[in-house]
Image 1 (cartoon, one colour):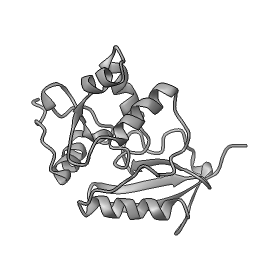
Image 2 (cartoon, rainbow, N blue to C red):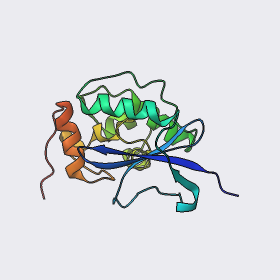
Image 3 (cartoon, helix red, strand yellow):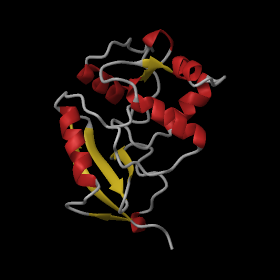
Image 4 (cartoon, rainbow, N blue to C red):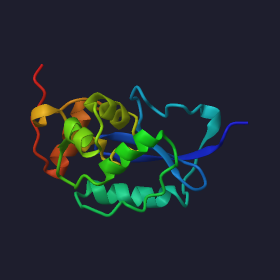
Length: 170
């Protein structure tokens, strides 16, 4: 028998977000219509709800974020998922300040990892976008690179925070 989850939909400036949780933890945040939408979940595993003790505070955090206000997200009830390496990278992401960016290479250096590409893979598997700010990770020269929800949404989030970055040249 598979695990059961609940979800609430959240209307944001970058699209409708699907917030998924179990009874204790936030499992993930996804933009509807994106390629990674609710990855690893089937429709039979998820029930839409109007209110939920884990998701209601998450919505409050998102409201605060989209109002342009910084906040302490260290106590988010994140699901204990991912490899040890992914957890190290995701924990690092949580420490990137609002309105700031860091490169994949800098994360690799700070975590004493030989490969910025390995860091990029872990960043790309972050299931809690926005609240665990993978959008604050940029490429060499502060260039806008990779984002599961698309570069347009990543650029919007960084502009919203007042972060400095360089548009990717085609």
